[in-house]
Amino acid sequence: MYLERQPAAVAHAPAADRLWSFRRGEAFRHLGLGAEGRRDHPRRRAPHVGACSDQRGTIQSAQSISVPACADALRALLRKPAVRAEVAEGLLAARTKLDPAKVGPLLADVAKELLTGDAKSRALAVALIGGFQLAALEPDLVAFAQATQEPAALAASLQALRDLRSAEVALFVELAASPDAGVVDQALAALAASRSPQAPAAALGLLPKLDVLRRRAVLGGLSSAKEGARAVAAAILAKTLAKEEIDGPTAEKLALTLGESPELQSLMAELGAVFRPVLQLDGSDGAVAETKLDLKGPFTLEFWVRLAPGIDNNDGVLGAPGQLDLNFSGSLLRLYVFPPLGDVLVAKKPITPELWMHYAITRDAKGELRLYGNGELESVGRFPVPKDFLGCDVAWTVPKRGTQGALAEYRVWSVARSAKEIRDNFTRTFAGEDRPAGLTFFNAGGDASWAKLGKGAKVVRTTDVPPLITKAQFDVLARKQAHYMALGHKGGNVAQGKALAAICQTCHTINGQGGLIGPNLSGAGAMGLEGVVRNVMDPNAAMEAAYRVFRLELVNGEVLDSFYVTEDAKAYVIRQPGSEEIRVPKDKVRSARYLRRSLMPEGLLDAMSDQQVADLLAYLMTLK
Image 1 (cartoon, rainbow, N blue to C red):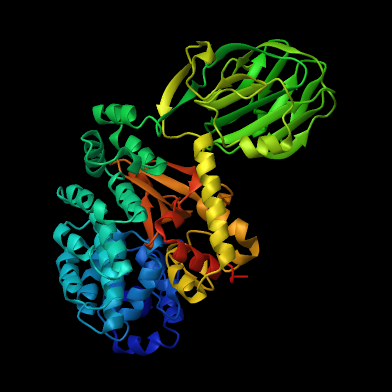
Image 2: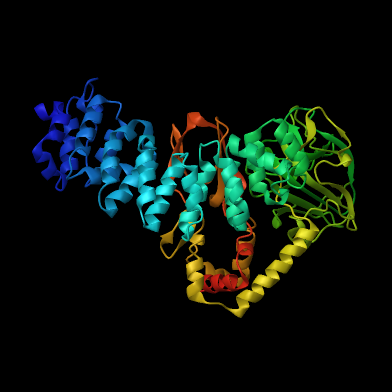
């Protein structure tokens, strides 16, 4: 009975050390036995003060650290040299289940002492400082980074300093010139994330010395927070930073962090190719474009659509009273023809909220209907429907409420386009080009052809647009693909390619080694050379749903693009490239959503020489 009531005393006892390597976890859990219903029951005061042989107890104590007995017991364990490192490792492994603000103070002294130990102890100390945000140890970590001669240890310490938003700008600038690629990448990431007011200017000053991928990484990092975003915007407007340096993902972050500011308005005018128009619909009965379209005989109707959560039959893309209603009842696109016909064509796959999706509906001369989703045939009509539909309005639906979302690249053809034509062209825009034969209606998003807009519809410029390319861009990509295919067929040095693949392993696992953000590449060669080239060139083209960007917009204006790991009632757990999993409290998050793109940057091969491309492809093709 005494042991049950004195968990801290038991943890201090000399015999406790012997229990650690034996059955300590089980013995400590027995502290919780007793009357289940009592408010002061020890199970509630000190649940599972276990250990590394059974880490569950230690973790549960840390999760209940606001209970004094749990905090005392955990503090006692961390004071014992024989078990301190093991306990710290267990807490580090479970850090995403814990509150760093509560557990961190117990680990500060441990990390400080470990930082003076052997290589293994130092590595653990660095991980603890970054993982639990031990800001008080930032000076110690800076001193360690300045003293260490080991590239791996230096890169790890820079990663931890990045997590702390360290203000050591001079150190980061110096290490950005390191001969070690890993050190350079972490120094640049720490500089872009720094809380120092001098950091944005210092980071922008390094851009001319960096390759295209590192420039994008720096600009993306700066644009994730307000001060950095303002510096990037100012540099573009002052013409000291070329607007061509700003890709879509960076522009998205700039738009979010700058908000409704004068800088953003000026930036949108400067970056017209990135901030593109879409038809925004607010979900009211007036969310309509009075286009009065006629669908006669053979036709093809194409559009990109993004819908807000809560999708139902209020959300539509085309309709006319008494004739048809093309809506998303049950999250499935369906062509409803007024009685007696009903639903004549229904999609098989539900649309995902807040993601752009392309649909095409064709009708041939016999009245037979087909529906395509993102270029692939999804369903066919129940029976032929040869009747004409006249005076149709974009986004009109029968219910009193209307569509909530956005439309872009809206096309109506006077012919039934083939499956190949739809598949080959659904990611192409015809904006700025002569209309192809048969294209009777076209609106990229903001053209006057929307005709009269209802009160709930308006054209807005945004970075949240479909992944469309122009004919000129399409031709450039085709030439690049042909060039890379030729290099792949020529062959390269597999050993050199394996070394280059370290870039891939920041996010991807290859034969058990690497990151967990992207798909496993251990069997990449099975895709064939064309598949490998296509996926590296355009990582968003055939992106698996599980690897979409998970974006957190924080209440302080910061933007985190990441890989979603898990969540609980209080926090999201995310993973970013080159970083460990972190826990983000939900009360610090303004919004959370998936994007229709991957974390993998485009243009990876553009930063390599022809020989490097040949070597990398040669290695990837061996992975089968």
